[in-house]
Length: 365
Ligand code: G3I
Image 1: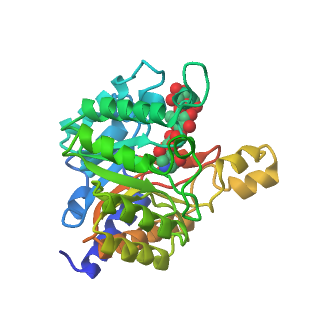
Image 2: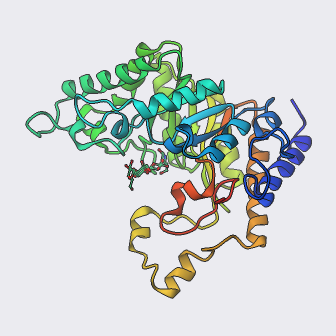
Image 3: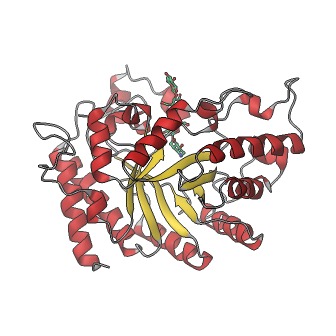
């Protein structure tokens, strides 16, 4: 293990270089062996895996620059969307495996540790999932059987290829209580246990994770700890907890991160930084974003202040913020299995939401 200081220096150099130099633009061929940038997966190889979430364009050959960046920097890969219930199982008797097959093939071809995201989530799950043939709410038993069938089909197809699954995603409310989702309402609180049980049956060798956002915040953190303890007490396999790490320039604080790592340690689970990005703006949710009138000059100034590029001083602050987060991760490298960025480059980040955001290491080009 390298010392913190050495690693912090490396983080600073690599992250700052990438952020400030803009790999993948100008004359340099991203991923080429002549590139002066070291690969992130090599820089952090003694500490954790480095990954990115990818969409279809990256793995199917439409976005060759992004693919080259992923190949160069990553040794783990996550499906941003194609394995969610909606995209992969859009209708009761129809699975759409092709995009997920390509994603898995890309990961295998590049010898990456492949993450399946995600089996059970309240979002991006079609309405039909929660209704019977007469469009009436499902009974508990029917719902469990549907969940089992889905998990067996999807996990079974990629058995031995996908190394780890985000089995359940975002099941907690901010106060740490279970979210009152359709899963919860139809099955009851053991829907989480059942999902882990089925996933383990479908591929006994796959790692299984619980993935959550804001779980470094008080309330949700305690809820997360209770949940993991419960799964463990029931003898279920759970290998890791995903800290999504959708961050901004101030959140999470060092104290919040430290609190998270300290709370996870006694649970005997690995930590995954699963969806890292750093918004240069304070958080505004989808609902509020939709209400913003970008034709109004004042609203534009407030919510989309950098439409054509990030000013140098903000770019430097972003680089510093990335270095700060990575030095925390490095400090807790004994607990962290991987750090995955939620996307490859700014242009395709979910955080743009109608404006220009700059949350990833690589810029719009
Ligand atoms: O697939 C359709 C496409 O056919 C259509 O042309 C296009 C038009 O808008 O929409 C496409 O689907 C969109 C999909 O992203 C792929 O681009 C959905 O509308 C859109 O809702 C979906 O957003 C995703 C979001 O999850 C909602 O599920 C984001 O890309 C994805 O980054 C985001 O990821 C989530 C994690 O899974 C869980 N944690 C939070 C994170 C950020 O919200």
